[in-house]
Length: 168
Image (cartoon, rainbow, N blue to C red; front, side, top):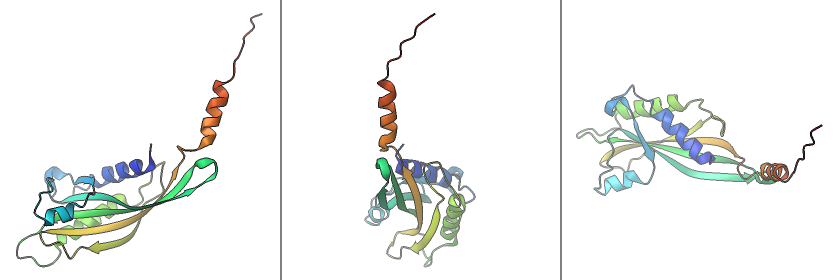
């Protein structure tokens, strides 16, 4: 499996366990990031219940290892979005609690394809005028061995052998 897919699935699964807040049906809705905050500000609907979270792969760097296996480092941004409450001029405590609950859910998560997730930054989007938008950045190191030619060499060598049995 592509390591980026594995990382996305693991983060999405963990964020959906964030249920201690007032989320719809006790589940935080998680989707792939596609500039939903900008779309929402332009008047279009996000079509997902608030609060919600979006996963963005902001940057993915690869280093080619021997035999075409790769190691990499991904910067993953989690976007938390909630409705703007009228007559409220500061970031609500609910949004900060949501981001903290997300951090707790992701803290120490590891999988076979990647190392533990390390939080490196948090930021408030002050330009969002119809929604609250809060982000957290994480660094994740991973290994991609699907391109490793050693596994292909072993397979082709084994399939190329003919064995004859002699029964005595």
